[in-house]
Length: 457
Image 1 (cartoon, rainbow, N blue to C red):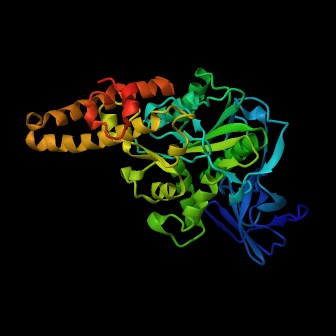
Image 2 (cartoon, rainbow, N blue to C red):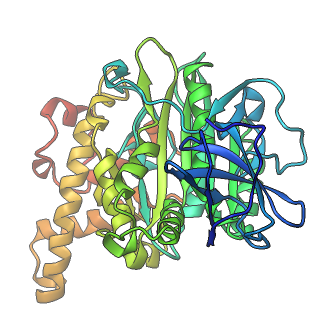
């Protein structure tokens, strides 16, 4: 690693947020550097590339005002680190982990590398328990499992900020005696959105929330380290302090844009849509920092939120995210236009491992059957609505008209809930109320003994 006593003066190149030094020795990839410009201001940087006699450093605060001849660089011989502790819960920090709430810098805790350490796949424990969000379309049909990574796909103008804040306020686990915390990460968020999040958490009494905010006018280079700092705190809370931690990261598209900007500055050959070819592995380095570890009580659950450019789910960011994660929750512009909140379209949404976390002994015995039946019935609603636009509703069969009635009730009463915080019992009861608008013979995915107990028709 770097030799802290050596100060290198002069740069061979300045390109965007990057500086290049020649004739350097013993510098390592990922090493932290201090960059001092002609004005005496000290900036932090990180080594992105090293060769036999050169090093490429990304400067977090940007390179404006730096001079190729007068800039001095000192390598610190260590990677970027952050001090983490339970004191950070209830606090607000900027994108590099410095307090924004006027409080002191945490003094206790451990100093850790922000890149964490990979979890041995053989040490991973399969997730079985669930996290309650208070959102019926999630808890009932796309259950969030502890240790899972379940992204939320949104679009410009959709209420993903409001939904993220609501989930942070409402999220909890059912077991008594277990510690639960939320780490919220805002990446490239606007000032008014940042104020909304902070005020929403304070108003909701969310004391077990650590908030990290990289603002839109902060240097884009900081967006690459913000989620890593937050995940470092999550790992400490989960695997050292036995917390069950929910990490909400918004907006991952801004993170990927920062990666693309850095790759362009380095002159890398672009891949799809100009993003670097390593976008998949870079996203995986974040998303895979969650799960459960054998022998540890804690867990890390991730809810990354991203906006799809032009609502294109095949765009590289949602596309690669979907490959890495275990499902997705999709916000729908058509439901939003109807005034339904949250506008979650359950048909393209999926939680791949919810089947192991629901049912008798975990949620309720009827939960998996009701969820399956609601999916099946609502998928038929789409076909019936398409038919009605062609032949007219009056030409539909009596059963098809019942499906139309069910579809309206499902959207208005089950999906649409506003700011209401629903328990799982309330979610399932509403589910039975709307599915009972259909004749019993149409509920072919539910065993008869379950229907005898819960069917309302």
